[in-house]
Image 1: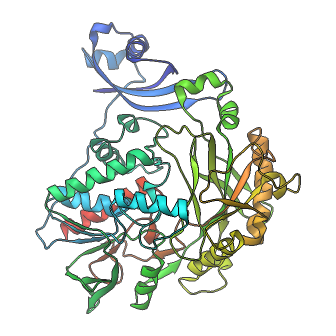
Image 2 (image 1 turned 30 degrees about the horizontal axis):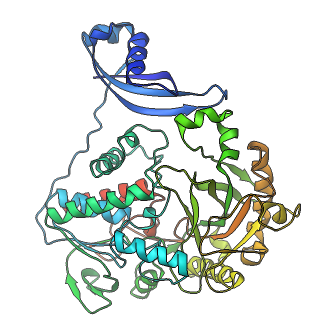
Image 3 (image 1 turned 120 degrees about the vertical axis):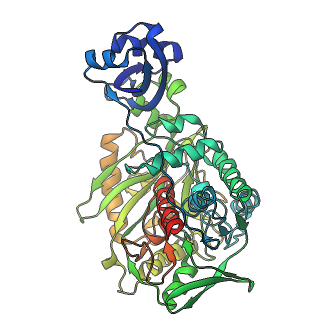
Length: 521
């Protein structure tokens, strides 16, 4: 098998034209092409409206050595197959949390025959979906089952982005598992793969069923209240209903919003340190505004789907401003996990076919901003502004919103052409009242700069909704670089909630890595 890079394809290509372009590029007859597989595809829109795909394909040909010899840019395919670790027999490990890190930890342990016990404080995804929809409709929050907690974790209610900068071979394993359980096969080669909330729900359910088929156990509405520690070793966990599970190994994948668990771990002496995070707002535009800028011609959208963007700016106050988790054709969603605090996020379904595009605009927050050297000071910093946003909206999960025109002091603060997608509802007000001054100062500069890069980004009718404060954890649970354990033997912090990942794929990779270690200790 050989690899062909830099294959240029029209955006309306099909299997037949792909085959012809491969043969033309490497100068062989079509009968000599035995097979081919797309392994990478990225959009090149630098000379829009003339846009095209840059692709890499793996091909099987007759007379491979001769073809390689006359095509210097071809290369032999290097194996990226996942290699399973050695396994030592042991009692069932416990996995706390069923977001990407916990789910993939449990999945790999199941493949290795170790029959994990998975404890998730929230509901199974179908019941969780009904609970979340009720919150969005009625403003009634379940603190244990919401956008942050429940089967699939926070990623279940998101755009389902699967981008990662990691070169770890485990990333391919993550994609293959997702496809096996219902994700579209295109995520194996797309440059910016995504799944969407609607598909992710079925994927995580299918993965759970696989864990159960392999002898694992999964418990929902199972909040871990305490940890049994003896001689600095984990001996088990205690649920809030009094049930106890004895064990020798606990994979702690609680997510970035498990503040009550953070507090319990700190009380019992787990080593925790402060970590930077980011805070800001969601901005909404009409999807066509961004498509016109990114594609140059809306006829391309039929082939390419909804476009997105990636923007960065360095503000004069020294803060980084950047877009994050952009959700094309999506909606802004209520994402609170604590009563009395308001949090927003974004999500899209696979089709990305809603009228608006939304993205987080975030500003760097540093530990020196927390006002204390306490390890959990960043949590309190988040809480302070989430509560201000809750109060500003009227204390019923109505979100404070403001037009870009008003925020930049250039227009009226009234909804016109762009209708906010947040539910239950928004209140047009000044978002300065619920964000740190250094955040709003940097945002104002950033939005103006982004308007120079994308025409219409700083349109006065665009809508800002506050606040986005859960893009990452404000803490890191310190773990040994070799054993990956915390300062308690057998207790392994993993994923985004432990401060070691940022997104679905990186969290899943971290979960797999820790599962491998647990399997072999």
